[in-house]
Image (cartoon, rainbow, N blue to C red; front, top):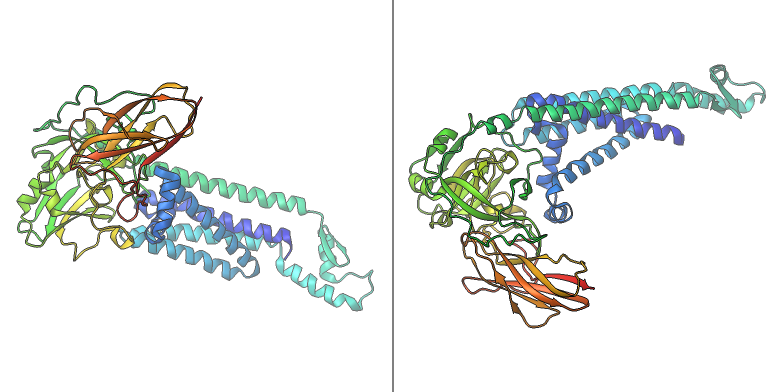
Length: 547
């Protein structure tokens, strides 16, 4: 097989893969975006990939980890398509079998997701079928240009040893009449350039059409979302409004995170490759399991209950020391504790499992949700209905617990069980069953590797120890003595606090470190620990050069 032939075969496989993925998207408009081949297979990758690789993706890409995963999955599938193209050039049935295997994988991934039905197989079936047709058309058509004739020409060349050099074998002569001049019985095609242009033109058209179909299908799926339903929601006034933000809580310094995080800037870390679209008109919440009085509520039922409004800071367990996977917002919702009291947990039901519409689960201690803290089933965020990407119509908000054990978005169930009987999503993947937030602090300004001018420099940042509160913050320079920073006032112990310290900076390179102490008297440890299994520890350290 010539180099040119191999290149065409590999490209044909890539085009077939693009067609398979792209044409699945418009079908998924009808069956749901989570059934699209790329999303379904990507979801399977999320569930099966080793935990260190997931954490690496979060560390490298942050809140763009899902985009990176989808792009990476698409590139892997394109590489797989190239291999199938090469296989098909040798034997078409092998390539077609590979396409069929890809379709089966997509079907299996779609059907094994929570809430799937038989129609979710359609995108992968249709995409796989069109991908197979594409591969066959290219390999048997423009790519092959009559592979059987070339094979016959090869046999004729083998027989040519007994022929005079001036007498070409019949098939070689036939090739010559078509513009392929024999040279030592090696066919040299004078129409190679035209053939190449025809092939690339066809490949480009199909790739472009598939891309348009894929992007168009994705856009249409978004148009079928619940944005209009969200805009139609009118949030009730809270029976227990949030306390006013005290004067001076937000220092309003450049590069310092604001005290209240805008919705558009609030971090998002979850396993959903496509944001679930949950219609509040059909949404239901079941509180069941080991309870004496099972409860089922509609969205209207939930809105009719007394609303509680509170400022609560949420943090992701994947947040590295000094990381930004944390945010503070004003949440509106219904007390989880009161709902659990009505349901009546049975003896030994020490875990409340929150279950999302896509099947994701988290497990929080029943005792924590009933200890009087403002654990909420939130329907509002910073004065508006929950953003769709942050869990519309209903999510959990629990002060003092990392999100992986408490912050279930797109919530549909609360199941009472025990830690001995059930492991939530992240526990089998190496994370702790319980995740209380650790005392932490961060330097926001000056930034690492910045070059502030000598003289007075304001060092500032945030510190948090949700539900315990921050008692003090200290800063030191170049390993010297700790200096007390000034914490700003905060709404409650359930939010972070801003802090500042005036530094008389001298020229040269300097290292700044910060540590916080919570109201129990615990000072965050210097010991560095990774985020797994229950949150990172260590002092945030920033190096700057004073000019």
